[in-house]
Image 1 (cartoon, one colour):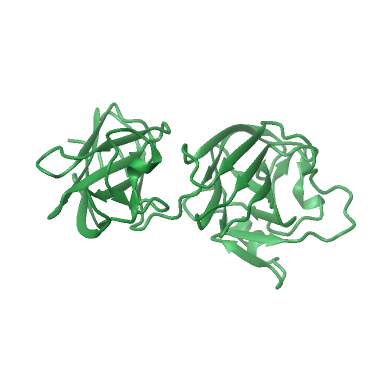
Image 2: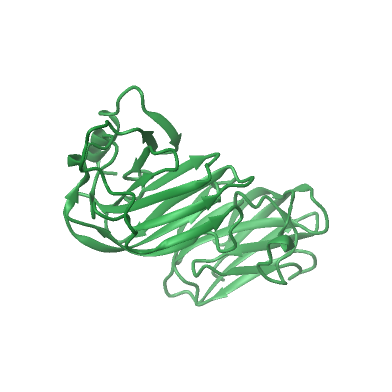
Length: 300
């Protein structure tokens, strides 16, 4: 993380700031600024209608981040940084809330990006770096409102445009953490202890006939950020004293599932695996219960 940016983002925040999620701040900008970003204009990369439990989660919008306007000159909260196209949002998300408790917006790019969002309540929510290990931003809304979310993806420090992906997700942080694994990782297999199962029948989401079991759909059990290399296989398996299943959302946006691979233990194998994020759920077969289990990740 850039220390200078951290100081800019946090030490200048007024005491009235309202924290909405990890690393995000929601504030009503001062009145009287004629040059605020125009959240009434048509978005550059389209409008998306998303209801609670949207099928393709995360939803991706490809954008060109950045623009010619420095957000620090727009009268926005101090947490809002970066260069944007002021006259139009990059994307507009019309969201219909249901029972989901989290709505998150995050960006991936090869450049240092920022997020500026005008929420349904008229407030501004911004972030620069979601954590110390990445320069990509994320804004999380707890108990999100229905309504219009206008989103700008900025570039930090310079007025340029860069390719980026904006993602919208109802998934919270993984229950048992995130891993960053590069090809050739050791130990192999890498093991993580979890509690399998949950209250949601995967089949009600129609993500594939092979996807079965009961899981905690709102939060993956584990997230693996994988950097591919010379290895031709990446496998995920689960072991337990009960009948378990595997549900994985891959970097390509598709769902991969298995029930019984070896006995009642499931396994999913990716041939020529892609780099990216793998969200993993271990389900319990046949009934909504929670049981101890272990995830095994291997390139062998």
